[in-house]
Length: 66
Image (cartoon, rainbow, N blue to C red; front, side, top):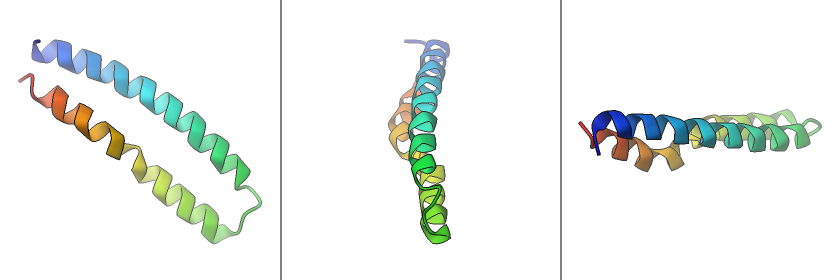
């Protein structure tokens, strides 16, 4: 598969994943509206970074097409 095709497929998968991830994170964040500030801070700090971990294999796969 060519590098361009890998990047196009990867970009579409990233977009789908991020939309689903944001919906889930926003739902959980809404549930934490009345939680202590430190719990909200911990959640948003973790949620802000955690999206990249499941996408790492996809980024590696996209880079192999070059």
